[in-house]
Amino acid sequence: EIVLTQSPGTLSLSPGERATLSCRASQIISNNYLAWYQHKPGQAPRLLIYDASRRATGIPDRFSGSGSATDFTLTISRLEPEDFAVYYCQQYGNSAPETFGQGTKVEIK
Amino acid sequence: QVQLQESGPGLVKSSETLSLTCTVSGGSISSYYWSWVRQPPGKGLEWIGYIYYSGSTNYNPSLGSRVTISVDTSKNQFFLKLSSVTAADTAVYFCARGGWSKDLWGQGTLVTVS
Image (tube, rainbow over all chains, first blue to last red; front, side, top):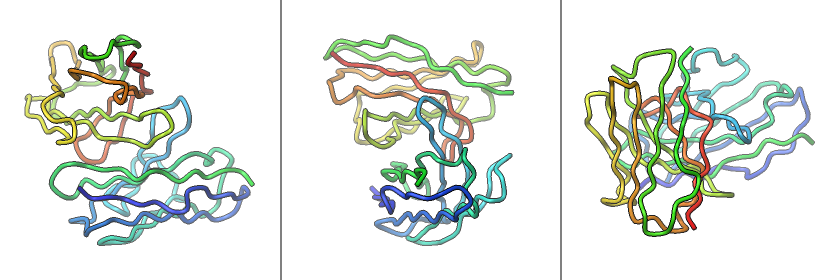
């Protein structure tokens, strides 16, 4: 099984700042099949990025994904108040099982 | 727009079977993969498995033979059964659309195993 390690665990930033979240895989993710989700308590998770860099429908362009092989990054160019949440990466590129990272919490500084 | 809603008992006794339903509204269940994902309290997300609308399935090996996912296209619903539950199965259970990346999720339902 591929283990995804997200860093940092918590990111304390102010609105307007840039957020850079990392997701590192224990082995190469085939076809860069990696997604990023935003999750707020009590709400449905929201797909932001799929295939490492493709923005999902309706996602603002301040969210961008990059990376390949084992190292991936989610960047939020300028944090809006609604962006403070937990972010998860997920790989679906190899034979089962799909796995998720443990999450990065982006909190207001 | 398409919405997903989980339903089922919030409390299940240890060693019994957890059964949940996901109802898809505002769109057809056909032509998509449908998934179950769970989140134990204070922990991250764990993929349980997925089903294609035609009935083919793929499960997380960590759950072994305890998990069964099925679909009823006439009702626009799909289902999760998890047998022989223990306290470790206490979690918020989410249903989602997609067999790989998941572009639509329900809000989740908490199931506690006592």
